Every structure is written in structure tokens, then in C-alpha cells.
Length: 320
Ligand code: SF4
Image (cartoon, rainbow, N blue to C red; front, side, top):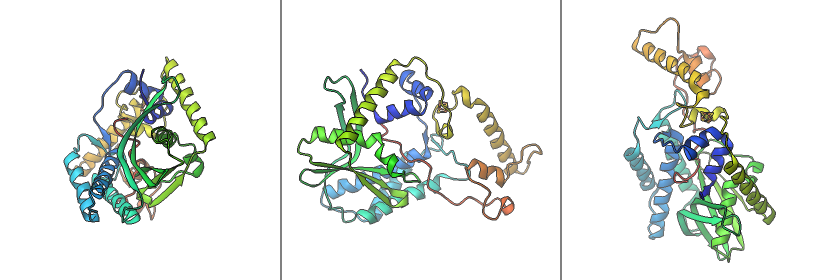
């Protein structure tokens, strides 16, 4: 019996074909989107911060930032980290990650609001009494601000804060709340805390019994659907550009050809032998960024786009 995770369930919901590549065919990929790579480094930096706090020595923010950059330098490989958004560079994301760390430090200092019970804390439990539907995951930080009160902290490095209704229907932290209640029978309250680090925003919620029950049933239904699946249709979306299986996905071959031709044209243009049939001007670059014309109109010149937070951070723990 597989052990399910929020990532695995979400993978099927987003695109059954990508699910099949990853979980059925088990096609390995060791290439990261830069957003996930940056998210991992931010998580490591905050883990380091709380490890130090646990040893009764609160590090200076510069020490946490230095840890972040050291981990980035140690792990970064240009051939393994993919940057989808044209006009943005690894250093733009690196700078955004540093901002995330600094924001968190400024918001949470002096880090004595709660006892930390776990960092990247692994859990596993069953959604049903017979243990048929096992679920696992990792909680970024589990804390106890007072006896009987538990907090599930989740770090997000993406560029937007979901609406309250979306947070309320979020399955990931609902599963975490179930896990905490299972592990700590004295829990009278479980708070779910999302930290939107790039935006310096924080959201706190708890699930009612009825909501937890609805999430539990929905997850079981989804597992049944996945287990019964025999077809895994492709489900194209804007996220295809970040998909690790894009190179083998039949829906993407045309787009990949066009992008390769554009990249070659841009490279030639940079070398000064721009071909007449494939200009790669600023308007083209901006459309690939997902935005409109640059400020001042499309004729404003080939300025480098302003660094922006990434569209998605680390989706969930890499081991899920
Ligand atoms: S590229 Fe898009 S359609 Fe193809 S497998 Fe990935 S997510 Fe699915």
C-alpha cells in the first residue's frame, strides 16, 4: 500500500499524466525549478535559525542570511536549476529568498513566542480506522505556545496570498492538523499558520470538526479515484512551463520547438548576427514573462525587467 502525501494527491489533481510519469512510471528527474530551489534554501535557513534558538543562542539576522547564501552556493548548479521566466536570473531569485529570510526574522524576533517541538517534522497517520489510507508529510515547524495549544507553521515563498476561502479549503494543513491531534491527545486547539514571506503576510486559521471530516472524506475519495485510474490524461495549464516532464509530454513538443527557435534567435542576436526571420525584442520577452508591455510602452527598449517574487515557491517538502 502506498503512503500518500499532499504532494502526491495534488500531483494527480493538477495533471494525471505528470502523476503517472512520477509515481507510476517512476521517471526520476534531478532538475529543479528555481522557485522550488529558492524555497528549499529559505526553509533550510529558518530551520538553522530555530536549531540555534533551541540551543539558547539566537543568531543575528546576518548569520541566518549567511547560512542561506552558503547553502545556495553549495547546492546551486546552473545545469540543474531551471529558470522559466525569461529576463529573470538566478541572482534575482537569490535576492528574493534573502528578503524572505529577513522578513521572517524581523516579524518573529525574538523567537520566544512558543516552544518549538519539531522542525521539518515528519508525521504519518491513517485517515481511516483500519489503516488502509496512510498519509505522511513534513511540518515546517511545529510549536506549542501554551499547554494544549499547538501551532503548525508553514513557510511560503510564492508571490501571492490565497483568498481566505482557498486557505479554508487547503488540504495540506488540514492533514497536518489531523496529524497533530493524533500525536498530541492533549491538543485543545491547533492553529494553522501560513507565513507568506516574500509579502510579509501571515494568516492564522483552525479547522472545525466538520471541516476536518470533510477533508478526510475528500482525501479518501481522491485516493480511491487514483487507485482506480487506468488512464492518465494530460491536463495542460500555465504550470506546464514548470513541469519536470515537459520534455517527454506529447502536449508540449510544439511549444518546446518554438521556444528553442526563439532562444537560438536571441543568442544569435546577442552575438550580433540577428536573423531577419526571428527577432527577439523586448515585446517578445515581456510576453514570455506573462506580463504586458514594459513601462513606457513596447518601444521602451530592452531594459531588464524588475526582479519580482517567483510565481510559486517550494510546493511542499522535497521528500513528499
Ligand atoms: S507538461 Fe503539462 S500536460 Fe504535460 S505532463 Fe506536465 S503538467 Fe501534464
